[in-house]
Length: 102
Image (cartoon, rainbow, N blue to C red; front, side, top):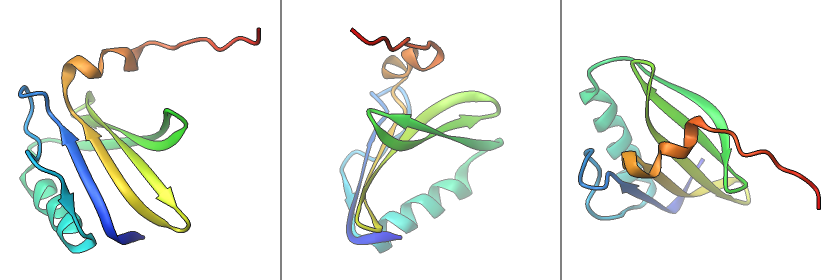
């Protein structure tokens, strides 16, 4: 599912652990996720959502929001992963924005 040139970009805002530089390449990205999952202390869950019109996963650690993993899909491959863990950028996730026609 990962494109050979997939890129993973993460943002912890200096408040949560995140990769300091983009990770590129399917094998490196897969190793990053698998290595990171092995270090998690607690229960991770994810629920599908949509962020800026793109598929995403709302990630929770022990029931609390840990981050949002947005996915860019081109063709049948994942070409971009964007994991936002910065708490300052996640505050709006608990509120709903009503959409109206004008």
